[in-house]
Amino acid sequence: MFKSLPEQAQKVSVTIEDRTVQVPAHWSVAAAVLVQDMDSTRDSPVTGAPRAPYCLMGVCFECLTEIDGEPNQQACLRQVREGMVIKRQCGARRVLS
Amino acid sequence: MSADCDLVVIGAGPAGMAASVTAVELGLSVVLLDEQRAPGGQIYRDVEAPGLARPAVLGPDYDRGKALAAALRSTKLEYLPDTSVWQLSRDLEIGLHRDGRARFIKARKVIVAAGAMERPMPIPGWTLPGVMTAGAGQVLLKSAGIIPTGPVVLAGSGPLLLLLAWQYLRAGLKVDALLDTTPLGNYFSAAPMLPKALTAPGYIIKGLKLLVELRMSGIRMLSGISRLTAMGHERLGSIEFVRGSRTEVIPTKLLMLHQGVVPNTHIAVAAGCEQDWDTTQLCWKTRCDEWGATSVQGLFVAGDGAGIMGALASEHTGRLAALGVAYTLGKLGGAELQRRAAPEHSARLEQLRARPFLDTLYRPAEDFRLPADDTLLCRCEEVTAGEVRLAVGLGCAGPNQAKSYTRCGMGPCQGRVCGGMVSELIARERRMPVGEAGFYRVRPPLKPITLEQLANAATD
Image (cartoon, rainbow over all chains, first blue to last red; front, side, top):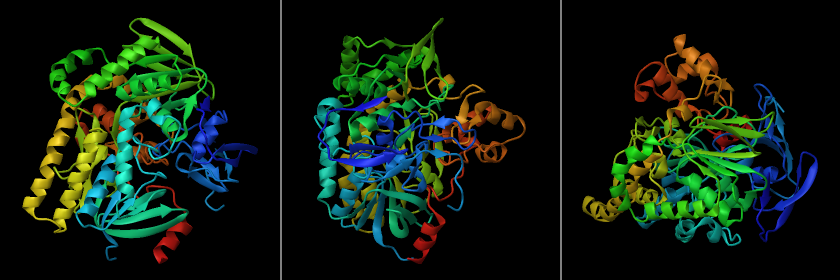
């Protein structure tokens, strides 16, 4: 669905849904996920409908993702980091994790 | 809690950057908070990053952000990027969140320069993966140098949509179609405002140049689109549109929607600032005077967050707000205030000359503002427009009651996306002015925060 323009960039290794990939260090988590051709980044807790980032600026909250074990992270506002573990968020969050 | 600083500025876009620099020049201690990792807001997003040939793709206007960011970097203030504001109280106590830790700071004055957000475009299927805003496309381009691969359709109305198509063209990508939903009647209503718009520095010429280049590129551009549907099972597969009497389907995996931008009033609403519904721009605006002073004492707004005005006018209102704040803190007298403010006022007015034309030309059609019954209105809680209409029929009097009846507005976005639509829809159903129908009450925390972080913040 998306590809990156040729640019020199330092890369980091992140794991997205158990797949380890190299992405430019300055990318947001949302950008990293979109380039992997993942259809959706979470399931809506109301009906389970698949959802993906919509606004990419922190307003719509569609990109809620589990990052390094922490749920409800807005992927568009988080920068990738070496060794980051990114997982889709399915269903409602548990109050105590 | 005693004040930590003279002024906290929320938002490091053009208004916030200009306000911060001017405030420091006037002798104030300033803390600048921003959610992004670098200054620029959305319009100048990642302008400091040395990407490959970015100006060549993004256009020369983007460069203005570099000068603003450079001025910011050489100014003595406390700049906190990657920082979310989860609370702004009436007595200007700010709850902020950074690097997994929350804390409070207290300001003597606050300028909220939170900018604009995309106006939602609630078409059937708009929540399918593969449907995004044109703004999202620009963020990917500016901050990561990412462009679509396969088929992409742009649809909607407004200069940003044309700009994105043009930027993609310069990056080597021809979009499959550009569907313009601008109501054809708008061209007639807007025509009388064109002469004044032509006196605004460069706007119209730039727009025309863009259009000519797009037309010459051979991109399929269709106007007068009256209906649009995103279709697919679990992700976008195709879009269907109606133009005149013809219906057509285009297979595509990516649809970028845009019908203008509206002020992001969320923080100001949460702080208790009075809002007004602008019947021309069809959006809520924080009520403020010529300095940006709101109904909450000590709280000012500047930039697109105060009313859509564009990046250049935003700078001027940022400086005016800083001047207003400095005056209320006794840093300068009335005569000096007027002397410094005069050029900012006139520059601002000059930049605004194209607005009546643009606002009229790109006024979105009602069908694209108030969706059909079976279309989702609240994305977070999956509430359809029909459910809200039904609730009104059952006695629901306003947006806050709609929350109880339907859960509309109670999801994670707290009504940022659906708020304006719900106000308009309820006003329409109850046959009253939108201003009277009102807006959601917004309560902190405005951004996700854990109880642990909250508890630690209180004891720090």
